[in-house]
Length: 330
Image (spheres, rainbow, N blue to C red):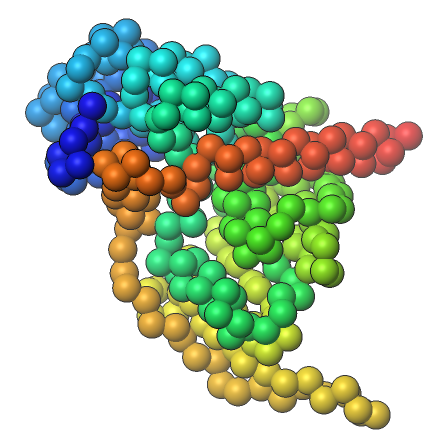
């Protein structure tokens, strides 16, 4: 496979809407080796544009010049195809979620560990410069003790039929919340709205409780007129707002405050302060991190085990969602 100083070579498997972004980024980085898609014409068109071969999945598995694979596939296909890739000696990047069940996710993790291959999950917002800065503020104690996290991810369109809004949109937010909490939730509740399909929720609200008192709410919908991508973190000393719809200068804003808990409780606050960020495309930074981990043998920030923790929360949330729906129908 790769030597320490060699750039890993990657085959992107799945040339749909998001897979094309992976193809573009790896081509610009210089790491693209091939494009694979179940539609040969789609693969050929994209491969020709970037000057690489279009291969079948089997041919890509057998190619000695391909060090790693990037899966931009429906999550139901990740486990079976992923194990084949790992057994062929390829490192593996899997777009979120890792799988559709913790059992399948565990199988992928165990295969990667047994075969000493890097397994990384595409929780892209963990690589966003604004979230990295926010996580640093929290880790350094600037926010104080964390009290609450509220995440909203709303949009209109791209209605799925394989996964609900919580899995399709909220996966990123679960990953960010777990990273900030540094723990797994001990309480989970969920509710949803079923507007376009009787069994797939278009809008969901997930509530997580953590040891120590931190509470998080994750609201997701693909049936909302206004696009919103906002993460609000409230600590005992300061609050932070990461709004990805804002320009870079104001994507992350810090609100310092103090609470006077006397006879007449009052809050005093300073002027909001934008946090300086180094601009960068999150997907590009994510791709570079994966390549570095392959080259150096390092553990990805969002490795398979991190993906499995997120998957476990989503499974528990799905059970809570089903329970809430049954109770509402009774």
